[in-house]
Length: 61
Image (cartoon, rainbow, N blue to C red):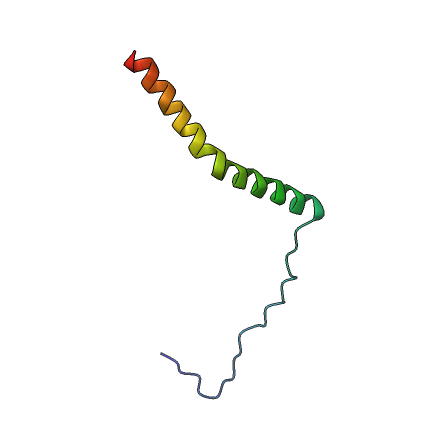
C-alpha cells in the first residue's frame, strides 16, 4: 500500500452548492399543510371517538 507522506496529491475541490430556498408558492403551500395538520391534531381524536360511539351504538342495538 502506498502512503503519501509528502501530500503530493490533493483531492479536487468541490464547488459550493447554492443555499436552497423555498419559493413563495412552496412556502405558502407548506403553511397551509401545517395549518391543516394542526387542525386535524385537535379534530381527529374527537371524530375518532364519535365514530367509535356510533359503531358501538349500531352493534350494541
